[in-house]
Amino acid sequence: MSIKSLAPLLLSLSLVACAPAPVKVAEAPFATPLAAAPAKSVVDRLFAYRRWLDGASQADLSKELTALNSVPASAETEVRKAMVLGAMRDSARLARARTILDNVLLMNDSDVMALRPLVEWMIDNNTELRRITSLNERQAVQLKDTQRRFDQLSEKLEAMKRIETSPASPIEIAPAN
Image (cartoon, rainbow, N blue to C red; front, side, top):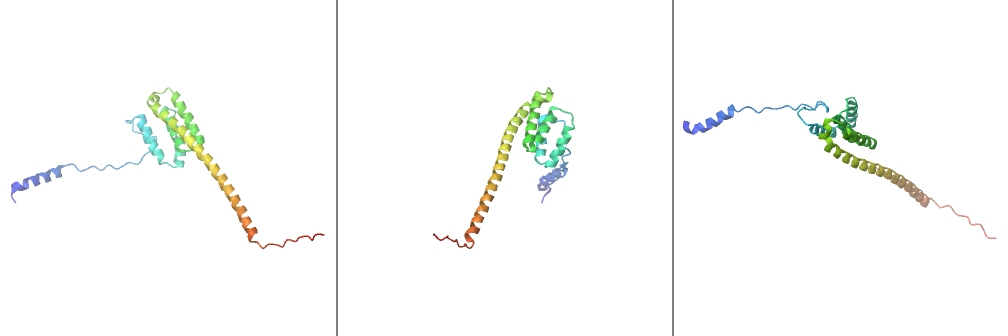
């Protein structure tokens, strides 16, 4: 092989050797749900917060609600409270979340204007969640009632089977006079 034929190969190898090595970025664990990058908008921070809530346990949600209650009230904090309450999926908490969201719309905070469409959507979503939760609770009561009736009928059926399989006692007929 001649040097002229090796020149392109040597040139490409030298370019590869000069290229910077890819930098591996270690993912930092999500520090706290309240910590958010200041460069993000309020809505972006709330969407990231919602993603965090989706993976949180009930205990984490309770701790987060306690932490939010100790923070001074702002539009963002109140929306976060409503998000936590909504993630708990309890009818009483959903009603409380709705009240909080209604109050956010009445605030005179600068963030409210940016949050208004999101809060209105959350109110609609909350209404639907409350309807579904109520329906679910009614169906659970109906299921328990149906199960109770099924158990009663099963007991009656078993009693009838026992009567049917038990030896018949002779019935004495009184002689006619």
